[in-house]
Image (cartoon, rainbow, N blue to C red; front, side, top):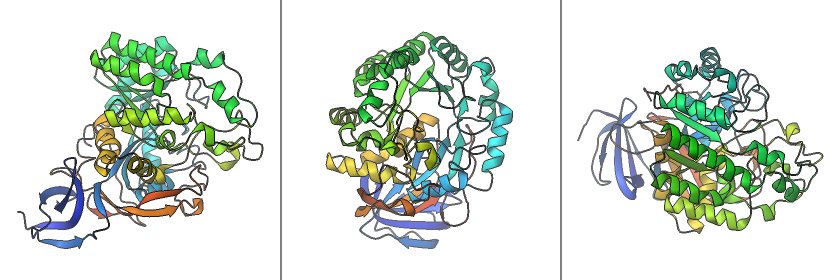
Length: 445
């Protein structure tokens, strides 16, 4: 075994190759270069013996984060978002192309985004590009600039500077992206279905739920499947809330359609029945649905019909959540959860008999694979030395003021969750007060 190591982590329990085992993990120059049995004696400049109450996980990968900088930094920002990620065991995030101003829809905007992030990041950060009506035919520029793929909406995005594509435009984007084997990620709610539904006005959560009917997701996902089949392109369904759509996705994949799907911690944690009228901190789109639907999402995750779990961290200033009126129609639709994602998912997973290795698959390995991050998401030789030291049996009450998010507003407030992140490491360095994250580009990540 190599003796010229910078760091060795001796872990009585670690998630390696899909199993929880004892391991010694050796690091040189930010990469994992040795993995041996726990009892082996690896020499290094620094050797850390982990306790028997923690499990060494690969750093998690969150491919769905709205950082909102520049332009709406008062909503979040790279410094606060990446501190929150590190505190939650997430060592790589990929930033969505909205709600920053400018949105990441061309090479100039990507350069502006990267300049804003430079020197602020506590974890590694990559970027999605946007696919909107006025940049179709020019998406190769962003691809060559290093974005990990392209996001589109099939209905109003919530911000005017990031307009939606109709189904024809989505198909055109997917055909264009297929030419260079890129990835299109889709907010899949159908505009016409929602336009025909009741308006979401007032404090009633059930009225809000009726304004975003299940059929909106099903119709949109059907359109994405058809476009992926016709073009041969790769498509990914964002934040699946409606478990009734799982069957059509399974059937499409059995027919070799190149399509994947994610869900989010809030859809696995909360139910419509428990959301009080006026509790707009729970508003997100698509909405949190009923308890039976939640259990169906969990079942689909366990069977592999849902690929991964990512946060869709979409914060805003508290005033935009309309807490004073409780009006679901007026409130910003977004859940703040980045720091809590691992604990929230582990809390639900262990209650249903899933393992920490399962959680690592859902929240590290598969998101990394989705984005093409070939050195992230695993404790394996050649991978970046990104780790989360996780105490699975420690419980805590969520106190919003102790979160690193810019704003102390989350629907998890007051909940008791299982699992505490004790430390996070990025490329062999502990996260802390100084930003150590790198800006990632597709191909060198």
